[in-house]
Image 1: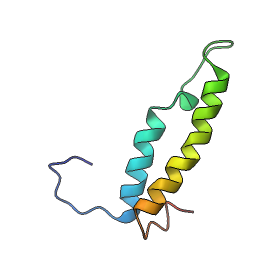
Image 2: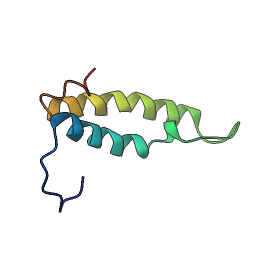
Image 3: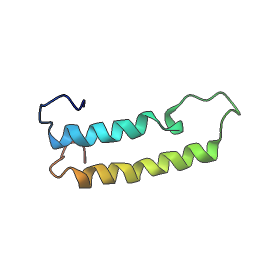
Length: 68
């Protein structure tokens, strides 16, 4: 979703975009070699994603598919 794009996105598309931006930057989805990285932080990051999903749902009423 670019700022110069004047198309109106559906609530599902808006919620998905917000969540994808969070998901792409999380350590929990990055491949780590054995004993590489911080497993505790990766798990915390994964748990935080649930909060971001709830926030995206609340911010975009009508996002029925995303909320499933």
